[in-house]
Length: 349
Image (cartoon, rainbow, N blue to C red; front, side, top):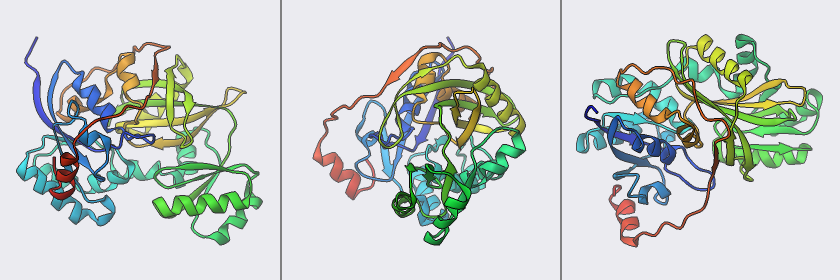
């Protein structure tokens, strides 16, 4: 077998809690690769992100400012890390980071740091607030939705929707609301965390099914694995799921990637109704936290994304094991207070 490709890969999204980030599952996929020998640098935003202390997953971790601090502050810190510890590839795994990374593409290129991300236009057209237009453009059913920015607009909901409705943040979080008081409570909670606007979306009754996929930017689907959530937490996160042999889901995925020429990882969140209608409720523009299920089912999406970022030819993966299941579990990770002190004081571990 040929020698493995040696790389230093920086990965974000190390918050492996009950609201998990995709970072650790992405790293697991890369660690499983027979083609890649990776040294993993974790980029963390909070000093209690569990991935920081998972020494079998992350070789070294650096603290980062939040993207909301501005691109200049963010990139100054990133290039400081790169100067100290050269990075070959960065895989950002959080929605709130992507705008910064895409806008900084030229800076990253000049400094020899590779990424594999959608364009700014691709990112913005699938925003939750643009979903109705997106559905019309790509001929897929989507629930009715509106964006609101103030309490006064909550009164519009009764004129345009029937309760219940979904109240969603522009990046994360979704709450079902059955009356105006619940809308207001959700509005306060989501806006305090993620800012405005807030998305009000028609509630479509059915089974939530999801697809993790990878597009090559030329309209080709490199990988796609559909899944049905088996157990959902109070935060709406899948705690268990099983792969599906749903040809309609796969056709929808292939068509969207072909028409939009999506580049990078993505997750489609879809409601399948009792009448077997499929409603697209959200597109997450990056690899989801359940991606390791795709690895277990036979499609190593983190590995494929890494190879594509290096300019390697990756043959589309079409086979995967139906009925493969994942179950998350809690685990007490034992560490030393001295490590917590180092990451908190020195900004690296």
